[in-house]
Image 1 (spheres, rainbow, N blue to C red):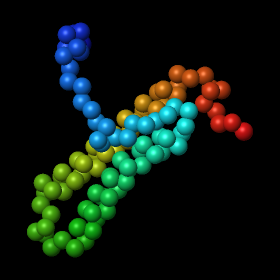
Image 2 (spheres, one colour; image 1 turned 30 degrees about the vertical axis):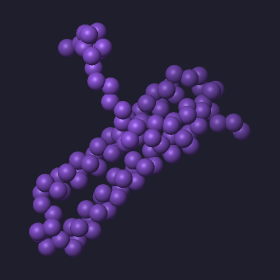
Image 3 (tube, helix red, strand yellow; image 1 turned 135 degrees about the horizontal axis):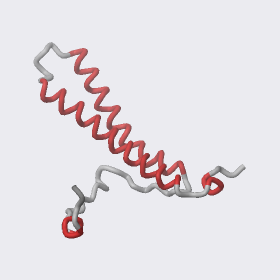
Image 4 (cartoon, one colour; image 1 turned 90 degrees about the vertical axis):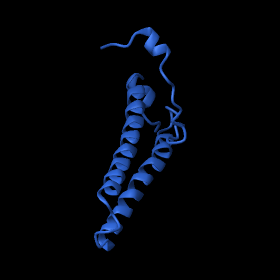
Length: 104
């Protein structure tokens, strides 16, 4: 089902700048790294915490809801990173090849 213009006009615009650092400058691949780095660090930190908690847990500290929520958080962080990569590479795909090759 396609959205009507009224649905599009009335759609809620959510600002996710508190989650993502959308400072990607198409001409600079380093800005992509800088934008994705916090997202990937958050995912890795949660995975580290889960690993440590699993090693020291005697069965009472981590309930299944906490583990499920932590796993979902990792998935969302990685989805954010994938969306940023997709947007960057889709934008790059529209440029002529000579424009995106690094200078020698």
